[in-house]
Length: 627
Image (cartoon, rainbow, N blue to C red; front, side, top):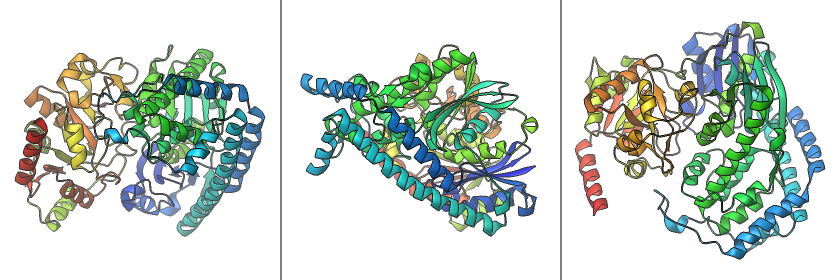
């Protein structure tokens, strides 16, 4: 049976080709359109998938989509709004307002040490707003009644806008499928069940506790399931708008970043701040976790978060929101692990892009192992929807072999692109060894090899690599690539060395293959690879084995044989605010514009045409910085 899975069209539209439960090809439209988080019908990805798999349109049995029809989603949103009005509780809201008053009365003295790489001290507070906006924000602290009224006002506005968007996406889906002649093969599925399906059926577990934490989907913002050979049994739903995704979006926007795209910056900032300054304020707005639920008082009143951002530093805001997010999910996870007795946990959903949060789930008492689906956001829902289209007994619960599910390109196609660009190159029979030798010379290497990664992480095939010994690399390399980041670069490491580099990896090895969880680092890792260790002593590794990626493992092994170090920095191969490169032409353009020393592409090694100038400039900048 062949199923075309399509993810939600509102962002990161993705097509997945699934045959008899196995993903043959999966690609986000953004990689082909070159527009980050591309929305709309993923026609380019579908056309490429047809070409790469050899499927014909007539051979597709089902088209699976991970949302209900627009009018049904609107009905579910209105039901959620009606239910929410019955849960208004002002006492706890008053507690949060009193906690905020206590902070102001005691005097807030921000600590701006240590400096945050890439963030100037005069940018530690959110940009000042107009008098009118400040007045609106301050209204949210006057009384629980105003807090609630602003929440209801914003909730109604959200439902109106979301309903219009769902109607648009329904029309886009129908139009795209009509064009392909697939309209009558469409099946729709509950959004959170799609998240749960991709996490469980590719975990390799026989049974598991499955949790979805997201912004919104099919009337809710998350769900809990008991998954077994009998399928997915729903245990609980988290009612919208008690949304952890929305909670985190609010702080992302309030600090001047783009929701849905820059939440990772908040995770990075959080390690520099004090979570206890605003912790009591935020905690008092949450309830229900002791019963396995999540309730957020005045959840849609984003003015409250914006008021906080005018008075507290970005680092302390980020620290509080991150810490409370971790505490809430850990409490909920503890409840359901104890209630069900299940020791394997699977998670999927946009909130679980938060790698520190995933570490906290792994640390819960009673949890033996955790699997995070590698494309945990809505872009991964197409595969989950596809899996739900299969008969339960036809699905073999095997762990996902790897995430290299996108297109690859032949050496001939690569060589043609290099010639067209007028670049000088060398062919190598052992390109991994040649690449490792450049890295051992402290060259920055952009690597383009094999099939492109599916999901948000670059996992060695579309990556920029560099030695992890220079703790200043996070600042100067991000500057060179036009990025502003607060997280250190993540390490790619040989899997067999994981116990010497990271603590408490047991039970999370598979997840760590996809760079979706952090671990505390050992002292050896901190000393050997300081550039890959965050200020809080954690790292987000990719564990690479000969089974998961033979070519990348061979490169790491060669580098280790030369230097004695089994780990390299691995960051995504793209320019700032662009998707990860897909084609040889994308790679060549990013290589030249990013002024990267070496391009390792297919079987070829390409030095940058201005390599000597680039290295001279970098040396001069390093000398100036040292002075």
